[in-house]
Length: 68
Image (cartoon, rainbow, N blue to C red; front, side, top):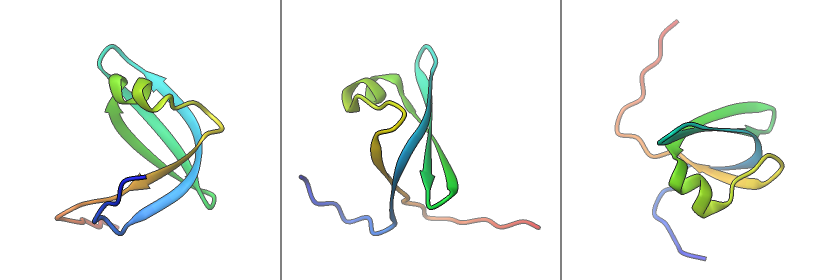
C-alpha cells in the first residue's frame, strides 16, 4: 500500500454509492457518523466501491468553517 502524508484518516464502512453521469456520492459510516464525499464515477469504478466495503475517508483541508 502507498504511504500518504494526510493524517486525518477515518476508516469505516461504505453505506451508499450513488453514481451520476460524471460524479458519484459515497457515504461512509465512521463509528456511527456519516461522512459524505463526492468523487468521480471513474474513481468509484477504479476502487470498485460498493456498500459493505471497508474504506478510508482522507480529510485534507486548508480551511474549516463552523456555524451554529
